[in-house]
Image (tube, rainbow, N blue to C red; front, side, top):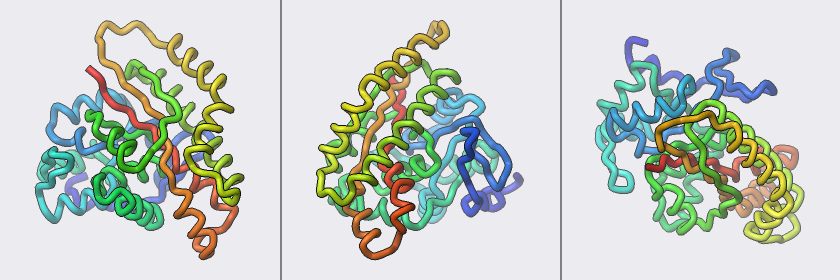
Length: 277
């Protein structure tokens, strides 16, 4: 691509998840896996190169609304991290960072979460969360504040967490577990959406039901680790966001159909990958 304008057209592209667990862009397979970038990944070239190494052959993604904000203001500050348009634009021009359109309903959910948190969480974080859930990818961050703010200000509930070496096999296994857990949580929330149960109680129940399976999968991921001399680790947090209030409203107002509820409830689950020293 010769200019950012051409690359930016990818935001309107049709991304779909297919049964072979690959992401397809307008019908063409693009990556085995990838990650949506938190702004902490984009503050300088060294951080971005670290992110590229972690995802290896995978892709790195950014919500189009965040890119548009950068293009307009040229310099933004998120959680006291400064991000400049010139550098991000270069990543996009070089095809190293893919700008993706966030569906309107998910962008609306991001804004409603923002208001629910009294604006204590940046909208950039919430849009990244919704895009990652939409693409069924982890959010890659180099700041523990990302997860802490979701827990402190939105009451997000951790379902499971583990540490992995940032290699291809471990990441694919962790993402496979994410897909499975998102499907289970989506189905469980959809079945109980009219029972009046609190989100926290529902999450605790799904944790109890899946505990043995989670322990088994974690053990398998740990055993599959190849020897690596460096101490770099990714802390993976499987965390649930409460969108039940919005979902009930959408169903009552016939904005979404009941058969679509499960797929949207699956987007309650995030996989946050935080690099540890």
